[in-house]
Image 1 (cartoon, helix red, strand yellow):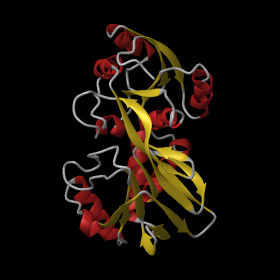
Image 2 (cartoon, rainbow, N blue to C red; image 1 turned 60 degrees about the vertical axis):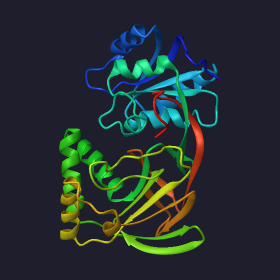
Image 3 (cartoon, rainbow, N blue to C red; image 1 turned 90 degrees about the vertical axis):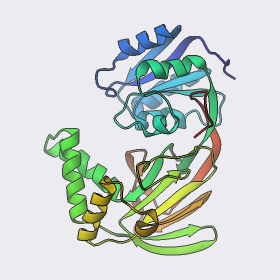
Length: 304
């Protein structure tokens, strides 16, 4: 178990591409101001992180810090589940949803201070066929946008944001509906939907708090199935979403469960987990893993 106020050398897995203007030197300096030494391991992502973690975890560290966006944090967290090693987070990505729901400071010095303080929480994670997600997983619209965005970046040499805008516009103009069969809480439901969203705990999907969670330790997944839309209706939904006027009851069929199964036509389907898309064999088996992850977070307030 980690000390209540850990000091000394702490391994930091740092995504080289994360955090505009935030490099290894800035991280080292922020740790030093807290009386800590950052043992930096800078890598690109994916397999590089896995290989690095193999070496780190063989040393049985008390804490491993992930510096990057939600994808990097999830990659590190997945290797720490049900262990005594505690996750620290430096939110260096663009959106940092997980850090926000943990109520972590988004600036580097504040995040380093949380790591130095050493207050720990245990939280739930979601899982789909062995793939872990801290925030959410989805089928349909979002994975399609991500795949199209990456294809545009490769073929057309577009930047991340122009490619995202192009992919989003293309998806909204021609939404494709999936026919899915859901097995949840003993019921079998057949639905046509352009977008199926699974959250680790209950998400708010409307108003100013859209995309946020009140708790991270409720032991449930939230399942939201978007009702089928015409192309015009989909564009209107997107506009209402941007204005904070989306209605969960009107636009989604929602429920919570500890686990469920999703089936669809074909042998496999694109699945997004915390922004990373992979092709996964069908059927999909979702489950929550209650309090499987130890994470450093602000000591004030209850776990969100």
